Length: 205
Image (cartoon, rainbow, N blue to C red; front, side, top):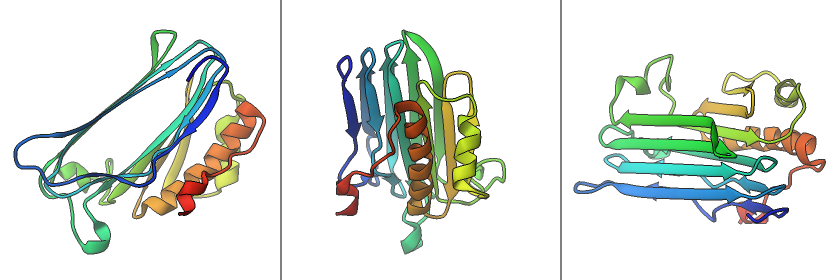
């Protein structure tokens, strides 16, 4: 995204990693956001089928005054069909740098059937989760304003760190998490850019 430009990027459908017996499926994303530019990267969910070997890497590079908001939703297996993620591996790495310095780094390594899938301190038996990161100028009470807009929720949380605002979802359905994140996105976009969020029309097709 060039200097001063604004872009909202999404995908027409879910990313799917199918069962693999011989090699890993990989997805690598690199986003560079120039001076004064805004990039909103809001793809549809990623589904890891039972037996998949999925490796995902996202790298974000920001100019000193650039703004970035991005989310990802992950779904293990096909809950509606009674399929769980019993075998396989899911690897995810997300890195955001501003002016060459890291401001957010997260890594996940999950094996099918792992105790982490049921542990109360981890996925707690839920098949879907999501993370949204907002990196840019925002009010000091941004997290409080997001909480006020969302209301009481057992599946959503928001934290405001030194250079990012982080929203989390953990629950049974991606659609529920996406609806919550859209509301949080609206608050953060209004605070940071002075205009409300508008969902891309492709999400309704």
